[in-house]
Image 1 (cartoon, one colour):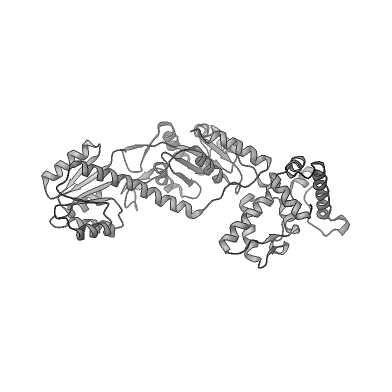
Image 2 (cartoon, rainbow, N blue to C red; image 1 turned 90 degrees about the vertical axis):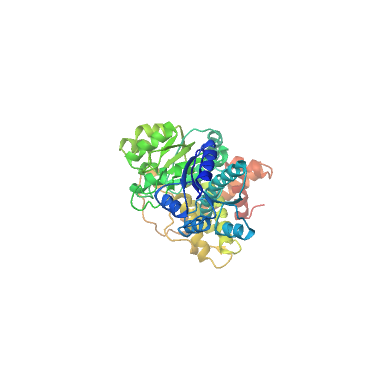
Length: 459
């Protein structure tokens, strides 16, 4: 454990000195206060990681000090010591929020164990608070068996166990954070996964978010703050939209990556950190470098391994699986039986360009689930304007034309459905009814084949 700053509070100078020597032998920095009032003044002007206080003192006793800290919303660990211990005072101290309660006289080993336990618990509680906030946001596993996704899985399996920095590139809504989380989970690193969106935080606050700050560093800095880099030490720091980070701050980040230390805003001390950094952007990174949005040296430092996240329009075969996943997800949230998707509705979803990628599909399914009152999601539950892939117009060299009603004999979808049904039937015949072999012939996943067999009523 790194050195911590501990405040010893006792009206007996001899006891303060004994405790100071013992704690310094553990490698900690120690300050002294003669009573609760003096301690509060020191805590108000300085930063401490732990308070070790006697119970009975003039002016303000240990219980009063503890209560004042908790009423000020200060969650610093406090160990209470007393030679007049009773069950009642112990219970009172623990109810107010004492980290430990020690009866005097005591062996110094008892104090050392209590201090180590309280400091360790402080780290655990900090991480638990962070994890609860993260879990409340929720995230699911990858969904998709298409070739682009299989290639992505293979790359992630190779990269995850290493400490190499990773640069994730992908359009908005493709799931860049999901890729970063998967890298962390498979990395074997025991620390936290800490994401920070560089575009969502004002530039003047981003440095404090990354590196933390000391009390009084700027207006509104009422207490010390732990930055995301320190939180992610031993784990993974995910820098989303890295090209939105101010250039000046990028230089400081580069120093952190090169030297492995951070310096809080307004502070002088350096703190060592063990970071695995994963960065992401929805821009072309080389164009961002050329445009001066991303430092070239930082880009080279981050771009050890580049991961390109597939667009949804490049993995059309995964759409039925994604639809099924999101239908079940929102069925749980809405406490209802999962509805089915009509063939016409699924055909529209499979033919749409999805400029918003998986996020747009999820939002659309959530909307359909809210509007659908029965057990079948139909075209009526989908928003209007879900057109075909723009690639068709690009390949023909013609500009897209407004949709117009064509004679039934020229309607594309029925003919496409009939052709797909025929090809699936032929593949099943050639494969002797073996679904896995038929899926390989059709170059789709077996799960997608099962869906289509059910959709077309094939046996």
